Length: 119
Image (tube, rainbow, N blue to C red):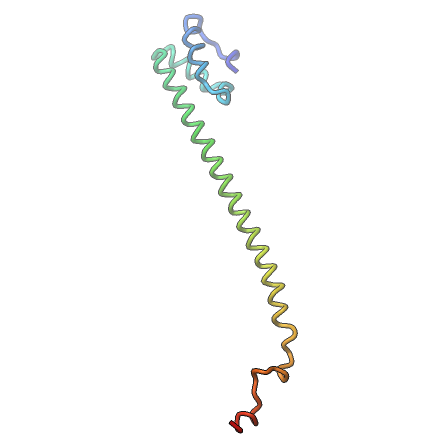
């Protein structure tokens, strides 16, 4: 957290102003906070603000990528589930076609050889 970072007294005002710009999710990032302090001491408040903005963009991109990956995985799982159901249904339907058509003698569409000769 912010309390754990050693901030020189002369940089405390600018640090607090910049710390307000840090998103809640990143306030626990000690590396970012130490970077902000270093940038304040080396380049001033403007450079430290740029570091915070860069960290925000990076964090937003990471979150977007994680969401995209989660959506893609959910779509893949849904497609696999649909295929499994379709395979089960096709297995059930193929059994219906195989059984019951063993005796072709009673079929109307098959003509005997004798009937063909008479025509």
